[in-house]
Image (cartoon, rainbow, N blue to C red; front, top):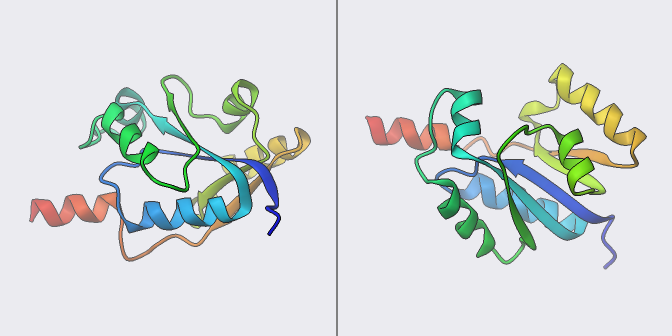
Length: 140
């Protein structure tokens, strides 16, 4: 079966790896020949989410490298912009959960990526599990 895209990209924290992460990775790999995952550094997570990941960057990356659907794992230390990442390491499609599909900035980035010949595809968010839900269960 031919894949729709040659190089696909997922970007995220991937803290406390769970079924939602796996669902997203599997769906992305179904549509691309080569799947790259860009993982945000601990410092970037703190900057954007005001909390450090439970699992450190090097361990999150190693977990993702062991997933059979993943072809490459790279760290992001500076700006998590999809446009900057495209300039750094081009991709044909960026994949994400649909919890960002109505975000105005993401809509703008989607248009900018299209100008570069790349798409953004949103998959249904796995409602049953998230890193936030896992944190809440652990707390109490």
